[in-house]
Length: 137
Image 1 (cartoon, rainbow, N blue to C red):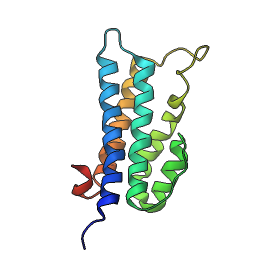
Image 2 (image 1 turned 60 degrees about the vertical axis):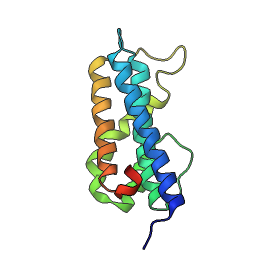
Image 3 (image 1 turned 180 degrees about the horizontal axis):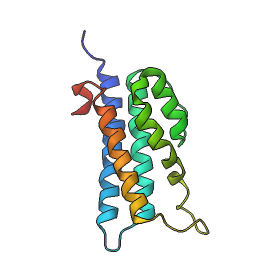
Image 4 (image 1 turned 120 degrees about the vertical axis):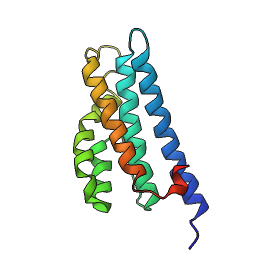
């Protein structure tokens, strides 16, 4: 049975945005000095968009939210084997806003940001592995 071209395009679009956020986080970390808060934000965004791609592919509606716990739980309803990755990613939720505005806390540490990037890559890879090739290219 042929895949729905609209569903393929929509899912691919979320994955492409997630990949762009991963690249942005890597560039932020490579800057001199590193742009840690911005990198952490892009890590959260990459996870969020990867999870939304998975939900999109499976026809599961999702709210306009930054909550990785909420999105992750929806993904776990579809595939419980994502538990380890989702549990590691949930704490990144706060990076959607924590360092984005004046008066907010200090920037994350380099180690914290590197770990966030590792988690974001892990989620993205796990989601890609659960989707057909047609949406990944």
